[in-house]
Image (cartoon, rainbow, N blue to C red; front, side, top):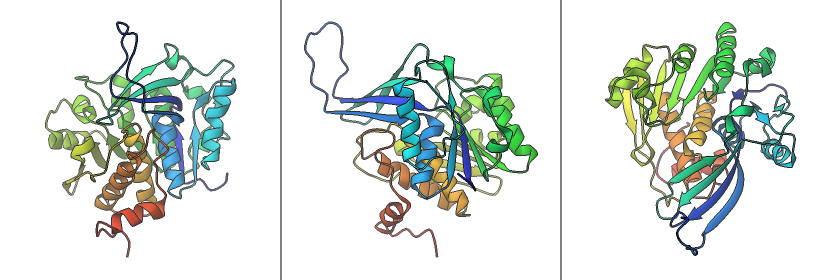
Length: 314
């Protein structure tokens, strides 16, 4: 695929989703039946690239896959969404990046269980092609394997292009040194709950955002689920409320937010417009089971916003 606008470097997963009212336990022979099941592609970067593609961007994904039928299906799912997979790395082993996702029927919240060999096949810096990584206007990384993400981000900085980092939601009090090294090469830090405080040591969400700006990014956005998202730049700080929808599943909501935010950047929208657009796309996604099934098109998102008297263009 020529003329890519965004290249994603990071994790691609197979999600096995079960929507349930209660988790199964060993001490009961019978449990309430699952109300939903789905087998979908997942992973922070891969799902962000699917979202950006469905919203009209030209994107590529660099990740790993196994050489078995499941690995082939994972790559095929990306390709069917219009994502360039020419630089996917096929490992000579079965697909290990599989997550069993239990989705709570009443709240849409979820619990992930990954295979014990989940991390063994993740991307390495030596897997990357510099020309391909830097071919887009933006690079999107998840930092789960900071060596590959760091190398890719350094290359983008060398050619004068921009990087978005998906700071994964965390409850840890601090982050390892790999994230601190990576964030220096990041222009847009869009992170889940707890990431900015863990990165900076600041517990207040605004103070954490401002402290994160001093580490390198020009924009810091922290997503807080139903509470919306909080944006900090050198010029302003503001809160964007979440849209109210009937939530079926929050799996992939943050990943989709990233893909949509990148599309907003491609449209040259300001931070407030990007936050509103990404919030709308993420909200719509949550109305269906799985991280990708509910991702809307660009036209569907604009219609959703117009129904709420919100205009982004014109």
